[in-house]
Image (cartoon, rainbow, N blue to C red):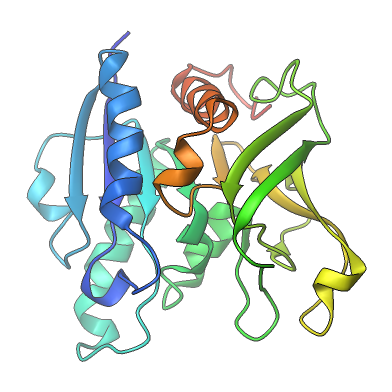
Length: 237
């Protein structure tokens, strides 16, 4: 069944110089459109949600970041954040990709929705390269039957993960990679957020090299399918 999906692309206040937000959004939109969904790709403007009118998405995908240099004020973005939060309150599913853990820092409701966040001064990643991300929960619909995902990507580490988030995939970081940056070990990179709605965070997807991996594309397709599947009342698994 066709669904409406809004893919948010970071620009201006929520853009950054390290990520190709448009390329990330394009990968998501192509997968969704191939399945017949009604997809709109929009940049982050204060009026982004107001311009949608009666077109209400069933899924919100966020591929934006956090600019270090902003000239506008938080007040100019209050309606944007309130509208985003209203979508979630009305039952829209949410997928945050990669740098979405470090966006909308001016509205703490976003981190609460996502079930975690990037923490400046604590979160980090080893050098970009081919890595194997390990599935630690193969009973969730997204990771059912999977053991690992191999992709040319970044391994986010030391993210803040909310209690109650269901961790599905981790990135393993060796002790010699962590020094002097952070903590070695298994770091959550894909999780389902706590709460009644369907919300996923997926830290993979730094640039098109990641999406070139069949494993990574299959994981993303499974995430989108689960998020758009009608869930029984109270079921977020």
